[in-house]
Image 1 (cartoon, rainbow, N blue to C red):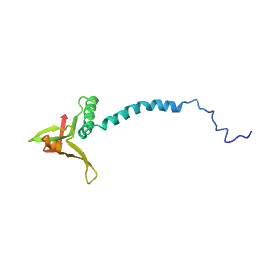
Image 2: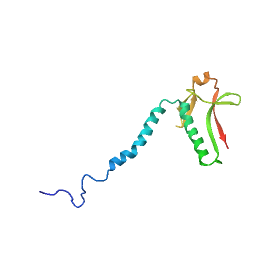
Image 3: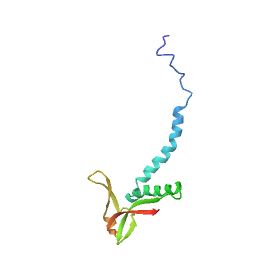
Image 4: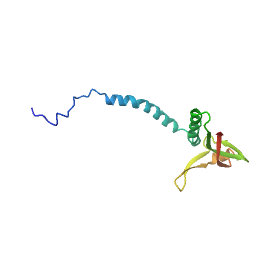
Length: 126
């Protein structure tokens, strides 16, 4: 019988190294964490998505060092003279400006809740 290919480079098949099994075992926790999170975030309001990064940053900074500055900038609704409050439910919506940057716009529900305009406020402890 004729031998085909380069036998000196051929390895025993199947390989004893369970590459696909190890890869599947290592990737399973990643998929189990990412997929439910993605499905959950689809039901979030624009304000919840906006505040998520600030929430995560405020917690991690205080864990790194007790003296670390934990200031962060939040988008808040201006209700009166010098009175700000956090946005809830569907009071804002994301928009893309003419320059391509992400922005936020106050919608009718926010106006009904008494918000006059939106403003960025630096908060936290320093």
